[in-house]
Length: 213
Image 1 (cartoon, one colour):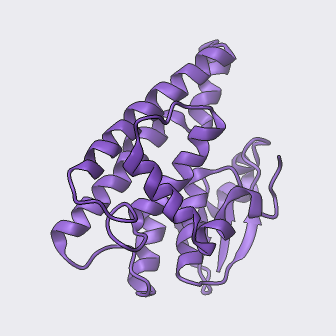
Image 2 (cartoon, rainbow, N blue to C red):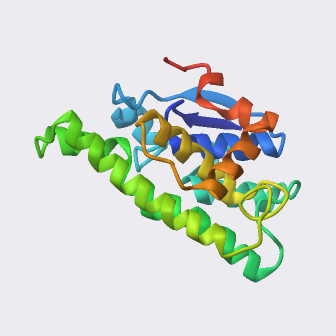
């Protein structure tokens, strides 16, 4: 398999985590978002959305959108499972994941931040204030959801799930933008539990071949 991705892309990070958790080898193909490589004709011919991650299977089939990719991997490589087998538990894991994927990330990805600066004239300070506001609001909701269930090591049990695959990259980005992460004990405990595992360490941005400090 080939994974077209960017070391700083949180959506790409999610898929790298899933691949590492499942022990699936893949070829790392960097696409530099900050330089606009995702908008080039060559990449758009592969990925009509012009977005990373893009997973190319051994037979040449290509899949986009991180959550769709992770669920495909989970359905085709069952161990370890990233979604519970019980319907209610599975819905709760998906809900946690969607707080990140649907409520936080769309407001704070690179193209939105660039639009704020280039088209709307937002200052660097205003852009960062925007980012921190929406991350904090989303993570507070994530924390409240965790608090509804008995304490577990990870987001939804004693092993990582889809929710952990999405949470960890969001915390990395939140820390990079110096967001206020106080009063999120369950969320940060799950993050720390994840980062104690080799799979999460191998997937993190600093371990990527295209990493830039």
